[in-house]
Image 1 (cartoon, helix red, strand yellow):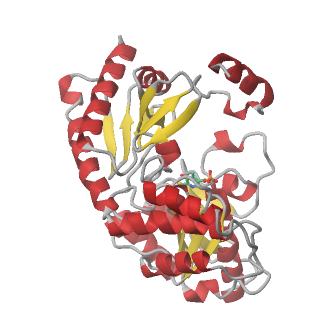
Image 2 (tube, rainbow, N blue to C red):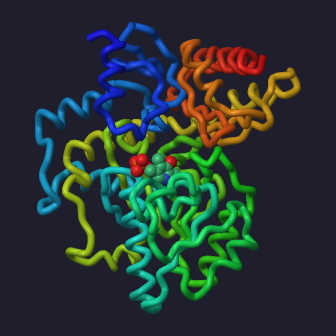
Image 3 (cartoon, rainbow, N blue to C red):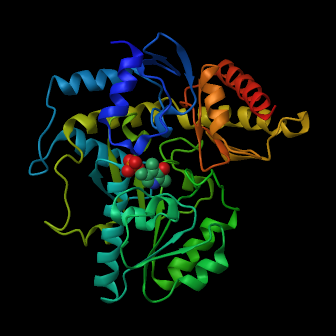
Length: 399
Ligand SMILES: *Cc1c(COP(=O)(O)O)cnc(C)c1O
């Protein structure tokens, strides 16, 4: 099938919500590289959207997929299955949490977090304690509850009425948060670094300040680590950078290196309100996906992949930081580990396109931010090449 026909069929048969897809068909991947249907090679500095952190077709991940597919693909949560048990145990041994609920996506993990926070607040305090305070410019997903939690109107427009019981305050503003929290607040929901909203890293006291405000008010603190988690920022969990533990954490994107999964992790006391029958999922944590996540997470931990992310991120940030003084049109470089945002003085779209045409896949985050999120196994040589391509693209788009 030739590429042109494929693209025509895509335009004809899909709902048009991904109208701005790049005009290429990707057919194969290996490590940090992918190939399109015309045989062109690209350096993948998006990892999907911060998903394939171990790179494409990592042997341990592929091995787990093959073995699980030939052993037991699916059983429902009416039964126990070993991979799911091992995965929950591993996640709790390596995080603040005592218990895990498995879902299939980030939005679903956040749904579970919102539901458990509301139920906990209701049972611990009162029936009118159900509010979730989230932040402006955040991203938490596309389901009705999570799009309501998302602090960006562009994702909500046309889908009203939104859910009651959500408030938004500016990110990285402890005063605004203090004013918003009261005895109706069930939980505060934040990304430890805002991803989709433009890669915004909070100032150092922010997360600790949120922890204190929540403790004083009896509200729960939820960290959405769907993008920042599983090594992306140079630590296994982003909250480790500031030593601030949440009550609830959500994961998804990189957790099974590309196989769809979501997880909601929490402490014993909070987990206890999810009593038998209160929540569930048909697909959540099947033996297949749990095996793949287990292979992904063990590889991350065994091979100290987060440390690599910190190293490579440091290298990239240092080089990118020099660009403004070299006359390259860059306003600011932000991020941690291998979640990097480059704020431009104009739209990011044309730069993303120019990079792709030069063989480099990168992301945007918001209108004016170029986002780099390569696989965490990326080498210095790859980073060097990507930097050169980005600089050339920036200069080309500018002139
Ligand atoms: C991607 C993302 C989500 C939504 O995940 P889906 O799997 O697309 O539902 C939620 N929160 C954050 C921070 C994300 O980056």
